[in-house]
Image 1 (cartoon, rainbow, N blue to C red):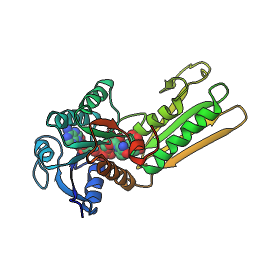
Image 2: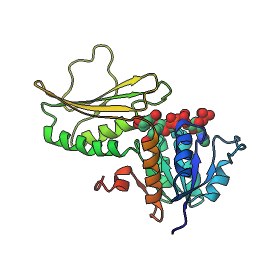
Image 3: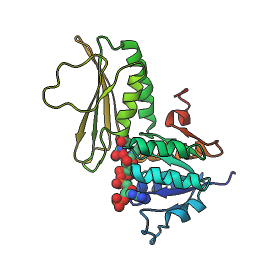
Length: 253
Ligand SMILES: NC(=O)C1=CN([C@@H]2O[C@H](COP(=O)(O)OP(=O)(O)OC[C@H]3O[C@@H](n4cnc5c(N)ncnc54)[C@H](OP(=O)(O)O)[C@@H]3O)[C@@H](O)[C@H]2O)C=CC1
Ligand SMILES: O=C(O)C1=N[C@H](C(=O)O)C[C@H](O)C1
């Protein structure tokens, strides 16, 4: 039997951090070696970040865009551990820092670790290609709980990228006199409230009919399962930035 993969969890006190700790502890292929939170919050089962990095083969990180970019730099500076990033809402500078770090360590980053959602991106790409931009409009709707801080969601942006292969630019918000909808635009609409775990739909609209592809997350456990699959997949990989489509073997991605 191979040695269990040593996992550290960032953002351990967050919604996903707690979900991850439960899932990792229950998985015999893994050993939960450290949990950490913000700097200075060690104690009661938590350690400082750098202690965690020294113990782990891989870190699973659902925190904030800024914390993830900083963590990627710290992991790269010491030549490891590998990193699974689930955070969303990245600025261009934060993304650039992660891409730089991925020259030194292997990183999986995805706006969604759900298997179903990653399957949906393939279907969206196929539908967008088949329907073409001339008479078919694409609109993406996402809904999340009241605590979510970024919009559109990382998943909505992923779906937008899938739809946009061969299409026009994103339209992130509409307000006031917007004028008619430009052809090829991909529109995003955002709903926030209550405890919604994550709902996404992509509609393809022509003047005669609407096709809608959608996904709803029932709870956060499948994000944790996907992140664990990513950590196991990363073991022994060369440096590089990978995504969930690589992990799931969904083609060139
Ligand atoms: N890719 C995917 O499949 C999924 C992605 N997400 C994304 O994951 C992220 C976290 O989501 P969620 O768990 O709901 O959010 P939470 O706010 O519940 O958790 C994030 C945690 O990270 C902590 N944190 C902030 N800065 C640092 C730091 N420098 N070091 C360590 N910990 C830090 C926060 O602390 P404090 O509370 O003190 O601010 C908080 O406890 C979001 O970006 C979300 O969009 C969520 C679900 C699935
Ligand atoms: O913040 C969340 O909760 C979620 N964030 C991710 C996103 O931004 O897409 C994934 C999931 O929808 C839950």
